[in-house]
Structures are given as structure tokens and as C-alpha cells.
Image (cartoon, rainbow, N blue to C red; front, side, top):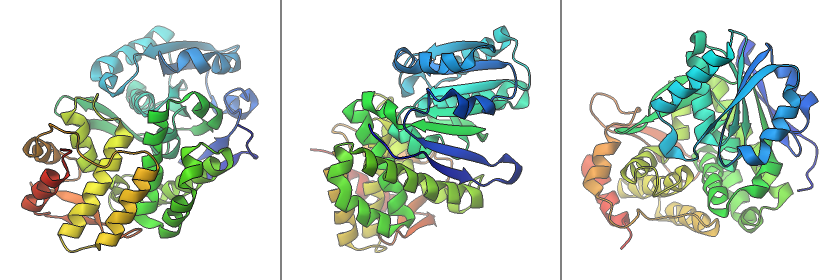
Length: 365
């Protein structure tokens, strides 16, 4: 990809502020990221898919330091406490001190696990995000949310632990499989659907270019989504209010992922279906117009994303899983719904009968 100069976005959190750098050739630009390492111990966490492609680029920038790599199996099913234990053991073997750093080289799973491990080791050490998937670039690498899955549900254990820096090398998207690339586009759509109707309009008019991975269009989309999220995080770091809006579609989506044992749907695919379910529920509750639901469904379709619950899933099981969501309060469902494109809202006490009816109507036949 021939891309313009690096785009930078600041996540403004006072003394813990950091830069998100987006551009081409960043992993090999050691002068760009080496200064972010404060100590001599570095653990590079990656997976068996990404490491053969990009670990050498990072390793060349670690010369003179005491470092090691930890490669995990690829996939959401491996975001487990067992692997957190493996990572902590790797830090112990490295002799990592409090000025050590973990580099997360991979997608959202690796980023979440590296961040959670960094939050735990000696009560908190640095970590740097080097996302290699579109979904991680536009969402999970920014904002400091970390998490580990349990059999009972996704990300039920986690911590807020901000990275020291984020370096999103768009060249890594060249090797990203089509399905994973499209899954990342769901998170781009999500930001526009929540609070940026002009961006949603822009996505509608550039959907073909995005689907084709046009470099300039892609860079603009990533930068716009990251700027939006950075602003929300700066105003509400620990999700006490506005930041919860970023979970549009996630309560539905996480239930879908869990029901499919993290193998049926990718995270972004779950978010795509979940967003549409949230729109359909909003329409059912009289909060939004059918035209908004139709526009969202059409955009997801143009980007090659799923819009129905996989056949065979049980709506009653999905509802039970939704009750475990972290946003719920006092035993009632608390969902992110909308009044139309760009106008999301946190809604408490959502009628479970309406949710169940929405789920039943959306299962693929």
C-alpha cells in the first residue's frame, strides 16, 4: 500500500496521555517506537499466525535489550486464564522489573491479554499496542480495556490499563484474510452509528472502496474512527457514562460469540449482527424509524458482514447470556439502543419480552 504520511491521534488522559500512530511501515521504523521502551526487559506477545509474518520486524528494533517472545495459538478461544498464567511465567523467567514492557503484536485477543498481563505484573507495567488487524486498529488497541474470557461469558474479567503507545502499521492488513478484514469494518460502522451521522453517510458512499481495501480510503476511515473513540475515552475513561455507548451491539454480539463457543462468529461479525439487533429492538420499542434500520442493514451488507443470527441458536439461551453482561444493573437489562443513526442512548430496564421477540425474528432460517 502506498499511503500518505503518518496520522497521529492523541488519547488525552493527563499524565497518562499517549499517541496512536497510524501509517505504513511503522513496525520496521524502529526509531519511531524504540523510545517508548523505558526499561531493558521486553516481552513480545503474539500468536502463531502473526509472528511468522512480523516478529522479525520488531525483533530488529529490540537489539541490546533483554527480551523474549511468547507465541500463543490464534483465536478468541485462547483468551483464557491459563494463557495469562503462561504469560506471567514468561515475565518471571525474563526477570522483568517494574520498568519492563509488553509489546502486543497481533489482533484484539493478543492486545487484551497483553494488557491484562501488564496490569497484573508487579501491579502494573507498560505495554505497547502493535495491532495487526483492522478491528484492533480501530477499536481494541485504543482506550485501555483489557479482558479475559470465561466459559460463562466474554470479557467478564479484566482491567482498565492504558497502553504507553499504539503503532498501527496498515501494511499488516495486506496479509489479513478477507473475513477478518470485513469483521474489522463492523467496528468502523459502529462508531458512525453511535454518534457521527456524517461519517455514516461517508461510509455509505465509500463502502465499495473500503471493501476493496483502497489505501487512502482505509487510512481516513481508521483515523476518523480512532479520533472519535479517543475523544470518548478522554471524557469517560472507565465507562461511567458516555463510553458505554461504544458497546452498541456488544451485549447481543458477546452472547452470540459465547453461544457459538467463540468459533462460529468473529468478534466483528458478532458486533455487526448485534448492532442490527439493537436497531431492530429500538424500532420495536418505538425509539427509531424503520428507515434507519434499513440503512444500517444495507451498509453492513455492502461491506460483506452478516446480518442474521446463525441458524440453530436458541434465543432463550442468548437472552440468558445477555443477562450476564457487565452493563446490567440490579438484575435488569441495560442496553445501548438508538433513536436513529448517530443518536445512541443507554437504556435501562429493557423489556425482556421485546428482546426475546427480536432475537426470535432474527435467527437465520
